[in-house]
Structures are given as structure tokens and as C-alpha cells.
Length: 47
Image (cartoon, rainbow, N blue to C red; front, side, top):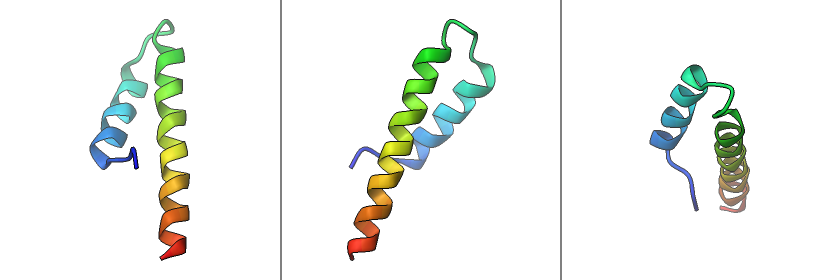
């Protein structure tokens, strides 16, 4: 499972300071985190 709260914090701070050129990469990182959160929720739901 590719999820950590440190990663969430790091991505969040990147969003706050990113330039327009960095936006696609930051958006991609955010979507990956979102996907990981959905997966985490599904796994927790199965327990």
C-alpha cells in the first residue's frame, strides 16, 4: 500500500508553493495519494 501521512504533508506543502510549471506533477502526486486513500479505505472496510 503506497500511503503515508508524511507523503500527504509533503504533497500538501508542494501544492501551496508550486509554480505553474510544476502543477501537472503536483496534480499527479495528489491523484496518486487519493488513489492510495481509496485503497486504504477499501482495505479497512474488509477487516
